[in-house]
Length: 246
Figure 1 (tube, rainbow, N blue to C red):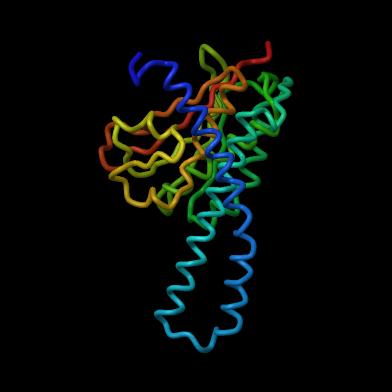
Figure 2 (cartoon, helix red, strand yellow; figure 1 turned 90 degrees about the vertical axis):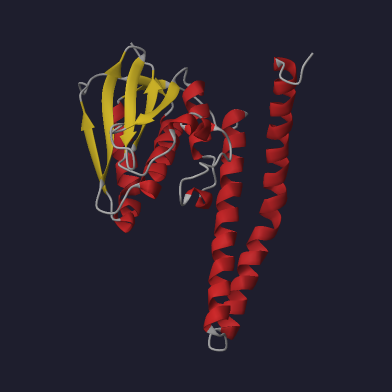
């Protein structure tokens, strides 16, 4: 039996999942007091720090926020994967879920200098079989990912369309390039695009969580370039495909 056998790969994945669960609990415990101590330090020394020391304080806060985001994503991924977030699919109108995500993310989009728009090519009475909470979580992650890399002044579009195996909810951006060889790899936990500036600031779990949610709905997540003919800024289209209810 080689190290590439399915049995070994399954054992490795099980070990990784358990490690992530353990790490998330170990990381969570010191985060709150660390934020508290940093707040106190800033309040007591605000007028006494040099510009260099202030930059160091801001860097520490950014690092703590990133660690907190990573921990939140690890916990969320574990909850989705283990079924701790219930998945109770019911017939629902996808336009309503998309409208809710646009409402929730409108402030974030504004702060990024990006417009959010919604469009559809399906009738209002078509329904998908989905869990509302998980669907909104998945679409929220897709929109957050798109906003993170969308250039200022561009538009992120949530588009509903019909595909052979279900309803495609596409989140379309005009962001920078991801090498074609790495397009599918970014679904892996903590995967980093090696030559794309700025990817190191993410928790690296959002797309993994969306993929897990898609599979819990007997659907799938597909990634493609929005404008493949543009080499430097082709954009990314993430299509979450969910089965119809009828």
